[in-house]
Length: 422
Image 1 (cartoon, rainbow, N blue to C red):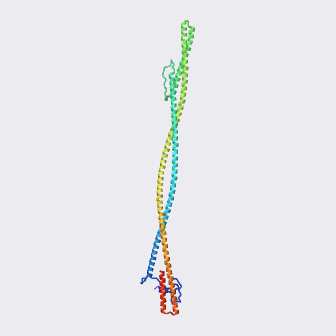
Image 2 (image 1 turned 180 degrees about the vertical axis):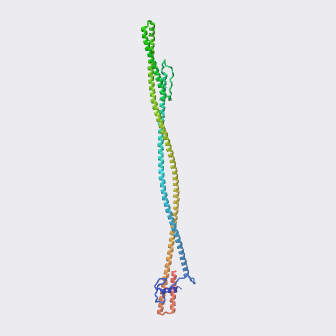
Image 3 (image 1 turned 90 degrees about the vertical axis):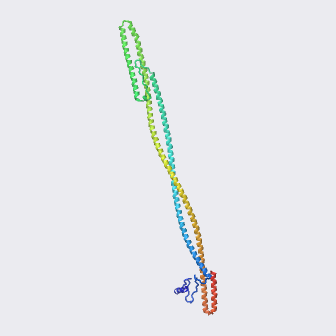
């Protein structure tokens, strides 16, 4: 069947379809080929070898297909591992940027907390200075109160030591308290009281002077007109008495004027001290109000700073939590990366193993191809020798027995060549 198909092929062309050799069509017997066939009824060793070779070739092809499939799967896994590795690297870079931002935010929050603490210390120092100033003003107020009380005691002692006029109505002086002395109404009433007393004394003095003038006039008249010595004696006796009474009135008036001037000076001094005390008191009230306002503002700022500090603590806690989450993610990413690297190494080892097996299979295939090529070359050599023998037989008219012996020899050579190949 093979021969007929080759004959039909050579009728059209001059090349052999098996070995691609140019065939000379002038010769009658153009070729002699041996074809391997799966059907061998004799069950010789050649058929067994051929079947084993085909079986090993089929198994090798299956192994090659399986290795190629595993290789493609390994490449896919490698690509996936590389993609996971790139994703992990991107996540690591993003996490590093996030950690950097968190660190910068923490640094800024620490600086804000330090500024808040410094501001709080400054406000506490200011509050201490304000408290010291307030205590100083309170001490000055107490000293002013003591000096005012001492002046009031001195004034009361002067009033108690003051002598009253004999003709004046004996009236007790009103004692002025601490609050009455500092008020302008009581001061004006005291000055009016002293002025009225002074006017009364001046009126009494004028009356006494008038009486003295009248008495002197009467004394002159009585001296001129009187004849008896008793009247003159009586006038002489009463005149020094009235004169002494006038001198006593003058002395009391002068003493009262001195006391009034002293009281006026004391009153002016007390008024000045009262004005100074009132100014200090007003300034103290203003400073106390300012201190209260500063205290309220300071408390508000401290409250705001506490809220900021609380918010900063919460932010720091959130940042710590985020940092911990990032560290957990980083550790899990490192674990996944380590696993992927191990898988890559394992896949590389498998790839190397499969590549070595593929090389072995290729080497076996190359050896099989070389053996097939050698077998084909031996077949060509035998066919050439057969052609030459046939031509020699035709030319020399060799007998059939010799020809059969030569053919047997050639068959033995062919069997030997085939046996050496397999």
